[in-house]
Length: 397
Ligand SMILES: Cc1ncc(COP(=O)(O)O)c(C=O)c1O
Image 1 (cartoon, protein in one colour):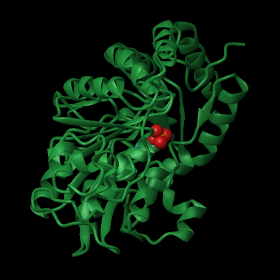
Image 2: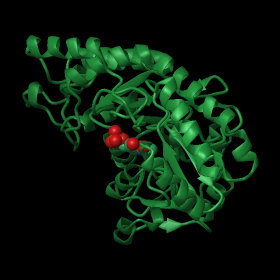
Image 3: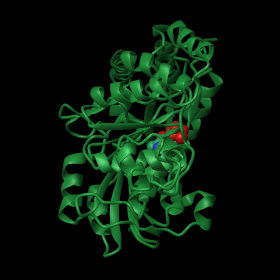
Image 4: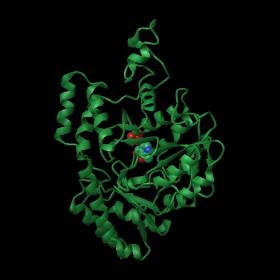
C-alpha cells in the first residue's frame, strides 16, 4: 500500500557534507556560520536583523522576554509588566502562549476563523483593554493573518505587533513576506517546517537596539556576541571584558551544524514552497465536487495572501464526518493529525495558567472538533498525491 507520511526529510548530501565539514573543523558552537546564516536570512526576508536561536519556541521566548526586559526601548511602546495582556489566537501552537506567561504576561485568547484558520480581527479589537501591551498574530499553517489592518490596530493603540511565523516561512501578503510586518517576527526550522536546521528558529526585527537585546538574552546576558560589544565593555573598565554580563538571559544558542543546514536549505526554500502550493492546488481541484457538496472545506487563503501550505488542512461538515474520514485515511496509509493544538483553551494545561478568553471560541471549537490535516510536503510524489485523491473520493462515494 502507498504510504503518505506527514513529512519527509528535505535535507540531502549537501547538508550532510556541510555538517561533516563543521565537525572536522572542530569549531562547532555558535560562530561564523551562524552569522553567515543570519545575514543570508535577513537579506532574503528584506529585514535589518535576524537572530538565530535553537528553536521557534526559543524565538518566541526571547521575543516576549525582550518585551518585559528593563532594557526594552522600542518606538515609545510600553514595556510588558506582570499582569499585562497579550492578545493571541485560540488556535495556535502551545509555545506561542507559554513564553507569554513565563515573561509575566496574561494571554488573551480570541477566536479563529474556521475557513481561513486565522485569528478573527473583530475579536482582537473587542479584546483590547487598558492592560493590552501587544498583539501576537500567528500565521497558521502557511496561510496568513490580514497583517496590514492588524498592524493599524496596533499602531492606533500603541501596541507591539509580534508575528509568530513558525508555520509560514515564505508566505507573502501583497508581495511582502509575513513576519516582517510587525516589530518582531519569529520562525521555526524544526524538521517538518518550510526549511529545516533539524531544530532551530529565527527572530527578525528592523530595530537594531532590540536585536542587540535579543542577542544578549540568547546567550547568558553576556556581551560576547553583541555587535556594539566594545562600546558596552568600555563602560566597565574594572571587569574582564571577556566575561561581562549586562542583563539576565538564557542559553538558546544554535550550533554551526544548524547554521550550515540553514544556509543550504534557504537556497531551496522557494522551490520547496512552489511544490507545496502545487500539491495543495491539485487537491483543491480534485476535491471541488466534494467541497461543493459540503462534505468539507480546505483552508481558504485570506485575501492578498500567497499561502505556502504547511500541510493540507480541511474542516469537515461535522465531527462524525471528520472522524470517519480520518480513520479511513489512516487505514489507507495516509498519516493525519489535528489542526495544531485545536482550541488551546480546552487543553488541560490552561487550568494552570492565568489567561482571559474574549467572547465565544466557537470557530476554534469547530476547527478542533471537525478539522484534520495531512501532509503537503515538497517531496510528495505524484503517486502519493493520487493515492490521497482516490482514498478521499472512495470514502465519500
Ligand atoms: C505557531 C508555532 N509557534 C511556535 C512553534 C515552535 O517551534 P519549535 O518547534 O521550533 O520550537 C511552532 C512549532 O511547530 C508553531 O507551529
